[in-house]
Length: 237
Image (cartoon, rainbow, N blue to C red; front, side, top):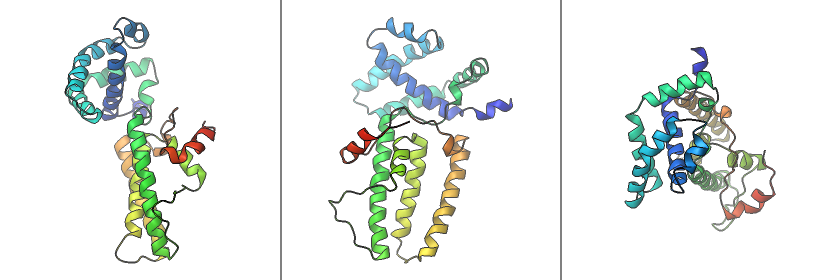
């Protein structure tokens, strides 16, 4: 059906299942009976899913696995159950909404990690820009401020997918300013624009929607103590 083209892909749905599984494992530890009372009205199959993954979560945690390793094991498990996505698509036609989700908003750890990486890469790129343009280079203890302020706000509220795109752009800018050959000013902008278009095309091909269609996360992420005051003072939408 034509409307199915707006749905998330099978790979994205697997990531959603992994997020749900992590929440389920935590909730079920507080008592199984209270868990279905909250979730049965929404999705009966999630009971079976949570039961099947509960033991795996416990085992992996006892083995000292990291969250990334746990998610990889869950990804392998869900890869053996492709019918879950087909069932979800069928339900979507009856109750639209779940698969029209755009972007990973729930993985706060990954969003925070990407947010810090972007900040640090931008800081390095700015230092290289100063060397490239002959401006005073900031000292190692100086606080780098993202400008304009709207840029910081957008990043605080971006999804995992958007942040990955921003990090790729930031790394490319660092590469240009750090290149052995000294590029002219009128060469930088066209290269950045062309690379941005390539990344955008790759994003759409991979995720099936443009970056600006990502959902706005309810919980913003920041780079840490250095922007705490701005974070607490900002009115986020």
